Image 1 (cartoon, rainbow, N blue to C red):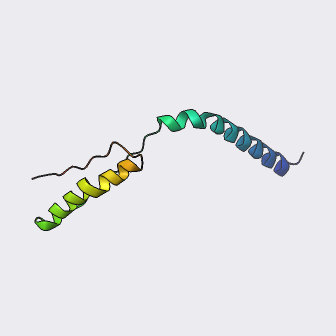
Image 2: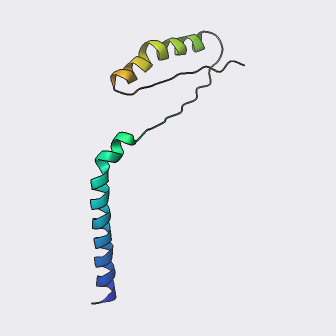
Image 3: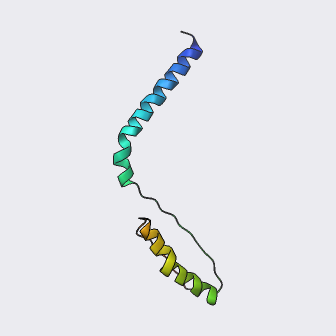
Length: 79
């Protein structure tokens, strides 16, 4: 067997075995996965911060909960 054919065949076999192993583990692993997304907003004091706070509380977080994303938290840092 030529070297190029051997390397191509061994890479293909390795990829197929890896794909098969990952596919077998996928249902068990997907239920244990967690995703975290951190966002930071810098706002001016006054009406901008109050409007944003009310948007998060009344619209954004409930919409994410309806999309089966929970728990969701929004925090305000006061200095």
